[in-house]
Length: 509
Image (cartoon, rainbow, N blue to C red):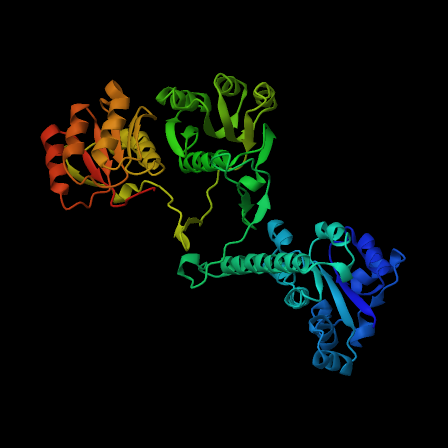
């Protein structure tokens, strides 16, 4: 009995060799429109799909492979009943299905319109893949040209069940990712946009991008999966340096997001996903110098993000110490020449524009948690003066903005002390707030005099205000909301420290 392979691909890479490989095994070929014409031009003996279905494609190509003879040929099992049913409608025995889906993901990344993208939603291709993958015990399914060479190493008649199962699993992953991309795109078209955390089903899908040497530690495997249709590190330009590691990307993301959240020019130094120095200045060079002076010890081996264009002077500053990664919006040619002297320094360029909406995902035993990303901003209208003398907020605007934005990126419990446009003390990751305050203030020492102190959550007692007074802090900003807020307010009044509540907490665990 004749055996057939059905071919319907948009990517013709390796198709000629695959077709010849099938023919050499005595497998005949059926192909849809464009694939048929390509193979005929290559001199390959192939039959058009119409010879099997009895009709040409209709609706501008929307319907061409949806026919009982095709699916009976793919799905029939080696049983007398299935053989009889298949033969009764004149369906061939199809032993291989080779399909590439319409390029929805590529067109999405290219910025195609909704109308154009709708036409890139594949119907017949997904159905063919799904049918072949279901009947993997008898039907080989291939969805990617990278699979062709390995598939031809063993004749189909001798292919092991495990190999067939592997191809079926890859096929289901392929269509699952394809459908996830479409579902996500459709959610962005709704008005207002569908928020994934409100849906009963949340699907995560990404395409593996780049090479990661290992995870947080050498014994852990790791990979970066890029989300389709979104711009981020997968679209950044790596001007030089080794491939980015798991830790590099995690730290770089924190640096980039904090820098993007602050007014330009600014510079952010990150170590272990926590800010160690942040500076605002009239120039990028001044901002970086402040970030460096904030903690010249911790910045060593860290990640630096600068919001602006790196020029020659800043490049010399950046190469004066060991850094893992530098991220900026742009670099001058002279700056790139200077940075190139540090061959292992990874130099990234990407836009500093935060997405309007993004979610964070964290795995736990048995599943994963999803939340909307916390975009940290200081709303001046929400500031409430609750204790101590009133401050001239216009005079304190720069330091209040820097302190409040930065504290939202420090691991809780978090305290940040800022003076003259730079962080002078950062306390984070503590199990109680007074220890976080002591850590930040002790780091600041004399620089705490007249500084702004920000807290990511309320003070449960009056002890933080008392500690702030001992170091001479000028203004304190915190969310408020504790049942003991009165203790902090009393300390503010006692020591004459302006105390403001924001009404918004920024835990980061």
